[in-house]
Image 1 (cartoon, one colour):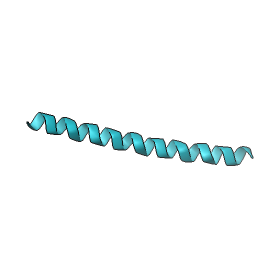
Image 2: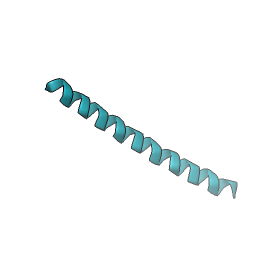
Image 3: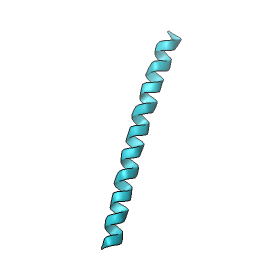
Image 4: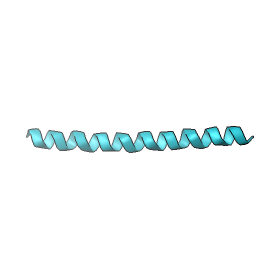
Length: 37
């Protein structure tokens, strides 16, 4: 029981981290595109 909940929390946190990294990458891509122009 406890192990499964821990795994769920770990999955959720990792997904949240991936989403944050994805947002940061998108922002960097937008900035670089603006700089190229």
